[in-house]
Image (tube, rainbow, N blue to C red; front, side, top):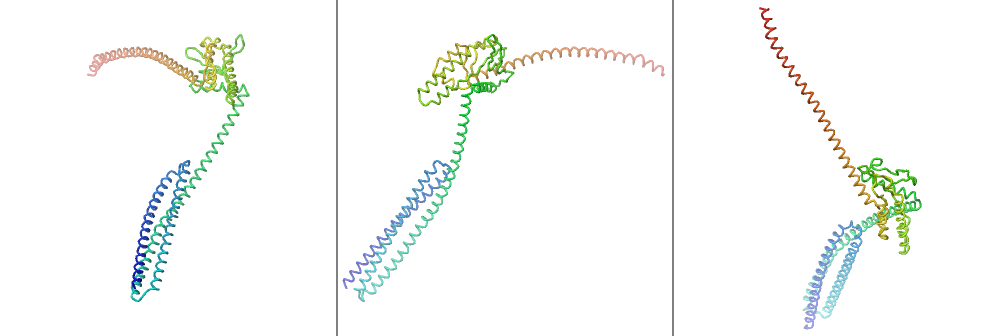
Length: 423
């Protein structure tokens, strides 16, 4: 009897302790599930923030990878929770088996005295374990259901972001392809233009002349009015034909001739080693000096009394002159000694705009003189008209006086005689 009571007490104690441990573990799992739920809420908020940045194609892939890692971590955490739940189920089964073993032992060693108590204990234990098992299953389902829904929404969001990323990269690829095709077309056109300018000296000359004309016209000067292109001049040495003659107020002119040194410069630009580049650049400097020498020998400025004591050598590119001056700093002084002024589009624009402004000021001055002359002429005409008007006024005054005298004489003499005749 004492053994049975002791065994029953031990069984109750073991069962109560196992139930307490299971309840404690369940509370721990419940806390972990709540923490997991908060982490998933944070992941959803992070995902919402990431969706706002979906338009940024270059960072979308990185953010998507981070979100996928977070989702993977959430899946790992879910698997761990499922594993803990499975472990909890195994412990519950062990407890049930322990209960069945205890029940079997009670049945084998039971007696009529402990029968009712044993039956009541087993009934209470069965009900308690049943309620605990049911509550645990419902709690686990309630915990896992939001996780499953959030995972489903997360997968749908990830799929949407992936589709947007693919579309964005597709559009970006199309733009890159269009840009590549445009650059290739520009490269081909530039190469074709470079080849034509390199192989055709006349084409280079026309290009320089056209660039000179564009600069002059963009500064407000008009052809045939403010400047003349390719003006021919017969001299003792032969015919001279400067590219442009710019008229300056005061019956002055400015002689400009365009020169292009392209072949050597292009060879220097395309050189792959420093030695070849230096050699080609020396050829470019030599070509520039030859142009200066030839232009100075023509002495355009001496053929025009109205021209200053120099001629402008227009080079249609800043880089041509800059590269030559970099390798030959004395080029500028050499040109000045030859009475040649080097000009690029930048400083020629300044010269042309100055000329255009002077022309405008000269036009304003001429118009002011014309306005003064017109004013003086108008004054003279008004003075003559005023004299005529004064004379007309004097004549009217005499006519009025004579009229008044006539009326007075008529009333005194004629009317009075008529009245007497009537009477």
